[in-house]
Image (cartoon, rainbow, N blue to C red; front, side):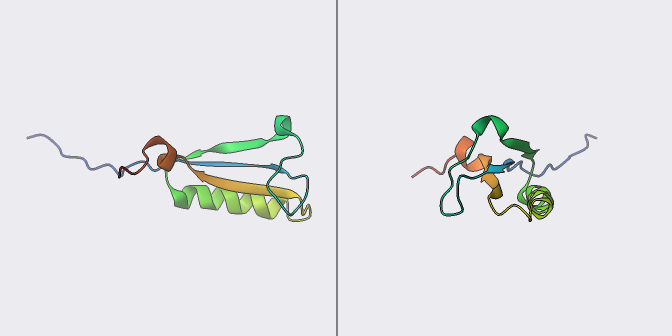
Length: 79
């Protein structure tokens, strides 16, 4: 008898951040200094890392971290 395993679908998320030129728009001061934190298999994992990174830079108003939903780019909805 074969064992049936169910795996949760990967919904990849990228967490990255950097210092912005100002707080009004998303324009990075130096692209060479972007902090590519990592790629995570689900939103909950990405959110936990994003929150920790954002809280660690709370004293710098121009430092921002983002979550990018890579799964939406890799597998866009079909019309």
